[in-house]
Each structure stands twice: as structure tokens, then as C-alpha cells.
Length: 339
Image 1 (tube, rainbow, N blue to C red):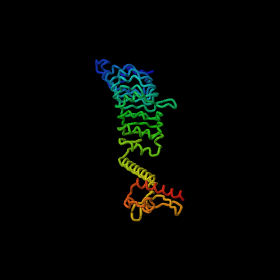
Image 2: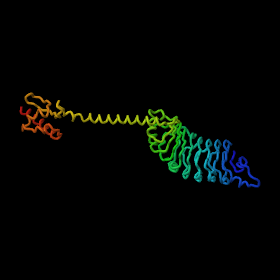
Image 3: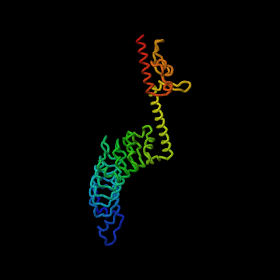
Image 4: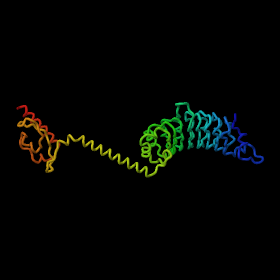
């Protein structure tokens, strides 16, 4: 077992103490500590390192985040590829900006409430039991909503990232090699993340969906790189024009469909060779013993009164025409009954 102690730090520091300088004073000057890949499994009290801002402890055997709460000036913490199973004891680190936790055994992203300055969070490739996926505590997401700008959640068996919509200032999302399936979920997320300019989803099933890239480019004006490939202005403009054309065709088809549905009404009207609109109604003629269609102008003589207005017959008045049609039908049926 190797523990990270103050003595170990003092011995391996690149800073050399001045003559007659106390160890305490010397430790206060240290800003960077690098003990990566040293078989370290525990961290002792680092509180004398008042100005410590960057701590490299990746590729070790650390299983608990202990005594880090004393390093209140820490801005960068590298703990990837250790044996951590949970995130804890980091809330006092109010100045922490970058946190690297990839390659551990963490199942839930939690315990980051109060870290309002955290800009980068890297939690890729957690070594989870088969079938499990990385989860996000809503309280942590809410706490990081305004600060987080870079998030790496690659290779964690994740199948839904809609909860990330709350991260309003996120500009880079790396979610390679997960289980994302639905383009609609990504469109929903991009509609919320208005500052996202880079998104990498290579290795997800959704990347194989038809028009996957086109749909995401169309829904996001801020996106500049998708899956490592730059989105050029020409590509975006082409897709915008293509969509506009497609929408126009849909609208035209919809209008044509409405016109077609209205055809039974229109079919009751026809235009003579002189351009006059005539109303066609079915009339039963006793002489021929069967109904036939006639122009309104041709059947005026069959009116009971026998003196319809010529002007009114030429004018298009749907109400009058409908009443006249009903009247003719009624008269025709009456004549047939008498016969």
C-alpha cells in the first residue's frame, strides 16, 4: 500500500526548499502535484498545501475520495483509472473547474452539488456490471446547469440523454459508443442546448438511421462539428433549401387534397361556352319518365310560377340555387306520384 502523504509530496516535488525554510512554508508554495501511476491507494490530509490547484492522481488504486475537501483552491482534479465507486467529499471544492473520473466504477453521477464553477466533467468508460448504464442524479444536473460546458459520457451503455437538456451552457457533448437509438430524442435535446457547437455520437445505433446527420444539422443552428466532421455553411444551406422545397410540396399536396374533397360541391356547377356559370340540378321529366341533369337556365319553364327572374338565374347565389334545386326535385317527385 502506498499512501499520498505530505512527506512523499515534499520529497518528490520539483520545488526545492530554501535554506532554513520550514516544511509547512514550503508546502504552501506547491501548486501542482503529480503522482500518477504510483500505486497510490489512499490520500492523506493535504490541508497544508494551501495553494494546490492541480492534482494528478490518475492510473492508481484509489477507492475513496478522502481528504480532498481540504484542498479548497483545487481547480483541476485527475482521478481517472482508479477504483472509485462513488463521487463524494468534493462539495467544499468551490473553485474546481475540471474533474476527470473516467475508467472507474461509478454508476451514478452525483455529489457535485455546490460546484458552481465546474466547467468540464469527464466520466467516460465506467466499468459497470453487464447491462447497467450510467445514471445522472437530477440534483447534480441542476447544480451544474449554468456552469458545465464540456461533458464526456462515452462508452457507458447510455440509451437516453434527454435529461441533459437542463445544461443550458453546454457547448461540447461527447457520447461515443453508447446505445442511443432515436433521432427524435437528439432533436429534442438540440432544441434545448442552444450553445452546443460540438457533438460526437460515433458508435451509437442512431448514427445508422436514415437522414440522421441531415436532421440534426437542420434542428441546430449552433452545431459546428458533428461526429468529428465539420458542418460547412454550404451543407447547412443546401439542407435548409431542401427542407423548404419539401415543405412547399407538402403544402401544395394538402391544398390539392382539400380541392379534391370539395369536388362534389363544384360538380353541381358548369360553365357554358359563353363563360356563364350554370347550376345543374337533377329534374324528373314526366314525358321521358326518368331524371336527367339540366342547366338552371333551361328548366325555368318548369317552375310552378313560370316566371323566374332572368337576372337571378344568371347570378351565382348558393342559397337560392340550393332552394331551387330542392324545389325542382320535390316537384319532380310529385309529378311522378301523380302519374
